[in-house]
Length: 273
Ligand SMILES: Nc1ncnc2c1ncn2[C@@H]1O[C@H](COP(=O)(O)OP(=O)(O)OP(=O)(O)O)[C@@H](O)[C@H]1O
Image (cartoon, rainbow, N blue to C red; front, top):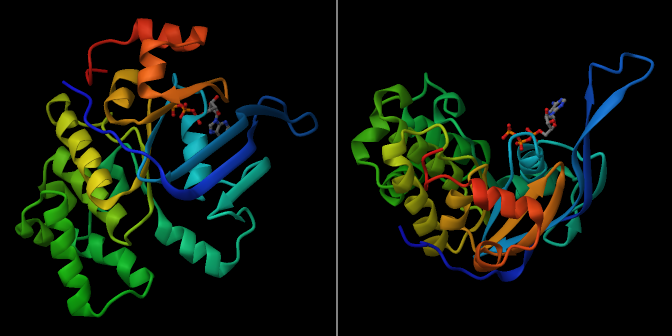
């Protein structure tokens, strides 16, 4: 399988993280002597439209914590988060709304990420309704457009997520992420919960959408081969830090960090983890 995506950042960064730290309190220290896990420990990161940045590392290295800051679900312990160049940690209601439209997320498991009681049409209308976008007819037209964009039949609108396959459910989650025409999609292990047979299709869909819509994509995975397949730039994470960053070619052809070399050496066959 050849590398699918090539892209270059266009415009100023949408999000910048500077010296970001996120410490989670653990139970082990007790009430009087709290102890912390330094899940993210001094990370600098940028993402712009038009580029896919892969974040790769073993389980527990802090990838999901970093993703949760990027999508605004987690407040960092310290450091800066800039959104379109403006400080965004304590954001106003107006900036929260703008941020919510600009940055979308696709989670690992579409079975838990989508409301099983809603039809796919209602799932796709929901973000538009929350943001007060469009008339009823306009929202339904957007649903049709989104279904076509992610390669689902129009008849999918009428059914619930449990009535379609796992791969199709992830397509619904991707369509929902695209509903507000975001600048950036953060995809956290978007193929790990899927059947091996459909992983490549979903990766290709994400790569195609990124190119077609000039999206920025943060692609998070523990599998360096999957990250290579979609990414223009790769950040290797180890114990809360980015220990190596470079173009996909640089990281694969000329890795400088021992941990990167270990990941590359241990990498099994593509998409089969
Ligand atoms: N809410 C939390 N409270 C306490 N510790 C946490 C919390 N969330 C994450 N951690 C710890 O922070 C570290 C980083 O976790 P994180 O989930 O960000 O890593 P990850 O690389 O995404 O791993 P995985 O792929 O297994 O999800 C781990 O040691 C984890 O146990």
